[in-house]
Length: 406
Image (cartoon, rainbow, N blue to C red; front, side, top):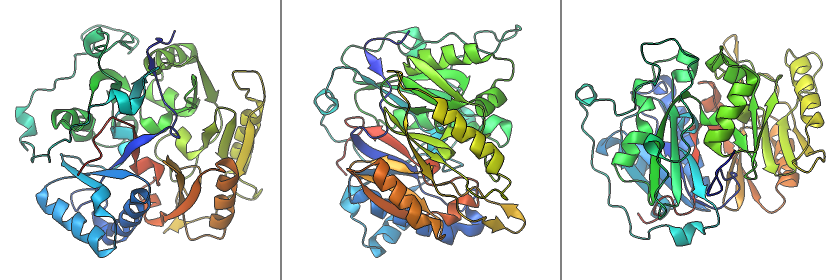
């Protein structure tokens, strides 16, 4: 059962900042770095209209480069903070912290107000550092792969009563071992060491889970896909996975989708490419209305599954189907152009735009789903070349978790 003092907030709740990592020549973006930087500049420009953005950079040289690019574009750099840390990939949705907040406490009132100093460049000799994550509890013995849930703090302890935030640091395995992930699996630990986060504790969890695989309504309901979680943990039953997720993420129930996957997506059907909460009683989802498209049958089955879901109060969800973009190809490879991969920030929804006529219709659907927020299009065609989109490269940080002073 969820603990009464911690909760997993919905994305539409107040935020301190959005966390991103700037692409550089040492990342997989190297071959198309100039193109993807245009998207990052547009993203930062959009975020800073509404709130702070924290940009992770590999070193001071990259920080100076990113600052110059943002200055040239007229971005409000007063709302930009930089932190230096090592990273291989820029998919912060999957490598960043999953933030729980203390219930019944105003985030701003609970957080410290002192600014965090500029971060210094970290020690680059990673091989000399011992991995501080706890050993798997079944090391050397046969087991089902699950450590016991420890929702009460690092090492199984309850978070200090004075702390307003609890950061869950799940294992990042490169989406099930598809890519090397050792450096990025340590990212949250490095950011904690850099004292980026205020008034918080960190809990390392020896369980593979990416932030893009989970979606919460902030009221105890979690939405996810069986394909992704089963791929990560093939020996676990749905009941086992539900119990673990509910315990760690402080949820009352877990809603599973059995259908829905996009060509060009190497995450094994992350929920944030398919279906998203817009409110505790509303779901926005990626639809396909082209019966000749290879996605049609699976996404239609997913739409039926979503229509059959019920809120905690037993009522059907209000549904907002998103339009389907025409196929976007990189050579013969189809790319995953999903409009469900939007980002909710303070006062706005940032939606991925792909230069397709459906962009305008997608914006109209999101405007109906989020009537009190401005819909801002961000050009994301360069992102899908690397099999992700706008939501995938970002992680929102709840109000009070970081200082907004630069």
